[in-house]
Figure (cartoon, rainbow, N blue to C red):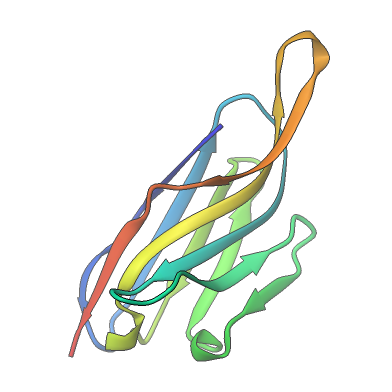
Length: 123
């Protein structure tokens, strides 16, 4: 299973961007999905996550500005980012808990990562 993230770009402070992350392949189920980010010189951090039942988590720094959502029918994760700040500048990665269908009825469960999309917020 592959995750393809897109939607990053350059935006001025106060602007908005919408990230998408589409899963493709032999998907049995998708469990928790989330967005992480890694700024230059910093560790990767969890920004927000959403359970397949809809429960969400946000790191304090993005509460009220970012909204995570998912379309289970399209196996796609979204992140709406509003009122962006220079501190939001980072490479954003999507992650999903995947149950992959394999041959002979077997299944494999693992975490899949997208390739990252760069978000740059200018002041």
